[in-house]
Length: 289
Image (cartoon, rainbow, N blue to C red; front, side, top):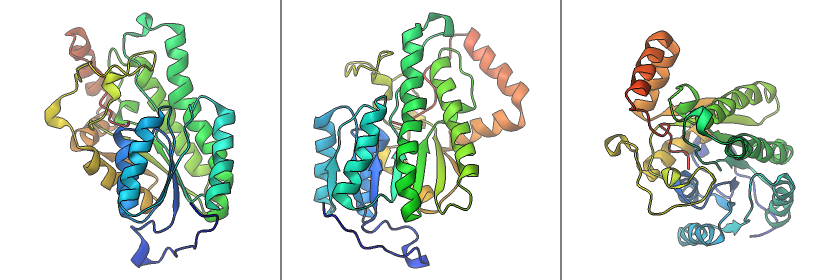
């Protein structure tokens, strides 16, 4: 990647494009992170890809380059605040600027609240909440220089207290409030904050155990008939970022669940409690990895 990037104006003809914009994605090695990287490359973006596992990041980088765009791989664990700070410095050193940051890294801890260990709770919040905050905190000074965009990937689980998904749902509720607060605090700064809340999307999230370890042989318990593909999800997510939407909930079932939680909270609670008693709850309706 070069050390200087020409600025493309935000006129109507460029609203949905990201030509030569530098976009940093965490959790970029699989799932929504990888799908968004490819979608952004199709729209002209230059990608910076971060995650814990180098090989998947290199595979995504190869796809980005095959689409004619530039890609820089910066491996990191989002729980390492110093590594995130160093990553932003490296991005500016290699690319000259940062235009968009997508805080996407995360995973799901499942199990009843009393059955999840203290360390599992801690890591869930360290990754999904503090890791996301670290990405935003270090990216924002550079985004303010470019009038850029930050996107926080949450989940419709932030509205729905499903039995057996307490740690994950708690983390996504925190992401939802962080996004709302950050959007208010950034008013007038030229930087937009888009909080994205998916429903079921194809990903490896169900194959990562409570300690954050990938288990390729695990089956995905989420309903296949409701699942969106990664590319379809990436298209609407990138549109939301391009349009600087404050909050974006997607998949039909996701919107329906959020609508129920907002407008009929008592009925929603009763239905979820009934499902919990019958053992029907499963991993939260999220596809954010």
